[in-house]
Length: 92
Length: 193
Image (cartoon, rainbow over all chains, first blue to last red; front, side, top):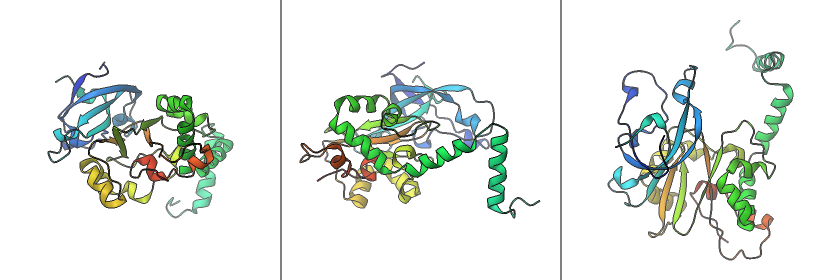
């Protein structure tokens, strides 16, 4: 679905504002642009697993972010590397 | 019956018997898991690091598939999340954190240190890793080295393969493993001699 090296943006969505959820996407990267490092595999969607619902397998990606895009005081070329599920990623 | 007031040992025995009778988990499997949990300690990860320092083929396997690399040293990985290994180099230093909870590569490092789960470590690690490492561990990351914070958010567990320190030429694996600490494999400290 996403290729290595592809530019992606984490969706700027806040489902926790609507009701009880279990989300593995940290809030500090919502809406932030990053780069796909690699696909890590397909795993049952933890957002369903946590509520004992049938969980579809979803692609999980390792995504790299420049820290300066998130915290202005950060050393600009320092990075964050985070596992993000495909359904949280979009093409900017 | 009030389950909260029931004797814990009896409750545990009842649950174990039911799991066994229903064919979900056998008594043998529970024993195996208890033995593996007891054996899990930073010493296991240190053995992997030492082997990787001594054997380029093992290092390649470890970076490609941490789970296979652990299993090849007899570490039980069945039923554990996949293990990923992040290599520190002269250009990049990795620091592992789990900002959402406390994901930790228990199979190879054992129980996490107390501070790993603290809100303070989790918040500071992503926001100001250089300041955190300098203030709490006296670990100075040179400006020329990029810091890459790995937020362990989902189905993988991550450990760091530190840089082999100078002054260790000719050391055998056991001696190398002896200088690798828990913090070196999280990325809060750097091994030295």
